Image (cartoon, rainbow, N blue to C red):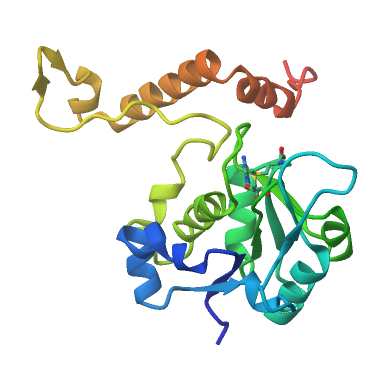
Length: 241
Ligand code: SAM
């Protein structure tokens, strides 16, 4: 039997986990063994009596930098299988996408390093081939919340986690589009009604309306995504009449 998907987190604050990952969809799946979480304290690899893990930046400047020898020892002590991705949460990293999330969710599950301070020494990033991943163009105070976002996005795609297998298929980004607007009862809310087509019972028309709304929203809000779609579309076959 294949072992469940596993996230191994290296952090200076293991007490932050499972945190929000311990409730709702991800929490129920964790409790029922659909995935596993291991939060390891980087400080356990410190060697001096003060258990120090950081030092001042070479070349000067503010803040502190996580030492390469301590972090490398922490990564090695985690002893993760070589086929597991090794990620470093980092604002300098490649922005996380739904496509990368889906890839990570189909694999055995990543080891994730959470940075703190000004960041971590470049030599351990290189020596342990860490893949830098960003969750957006803003700076958090540590990698833990970023790691939680990544793990949450992966876990909900694991088989058996979401109620309906199909519910991931039509979501934002699944086809490079943002999701269409959703409505539910009551039929009228503060004078606003549900678009008639959604209560018509005509499934083809509902699907066409949703598609058109998705496309309009993506064009208006995310010209970057819309442009990518245009690039990826196969050229029209002009040989047919
Ligand atoms: N000095 C770094 C820089 O300017 O790129 C920022 C360091 S930040 C204060 C500390 C840690 O938070 C980083 O090492 C990283 O692990 C995490 N972090 C901050 N912003 C992030 C983001 N947008 N995505 C992923 N991780 C982030």
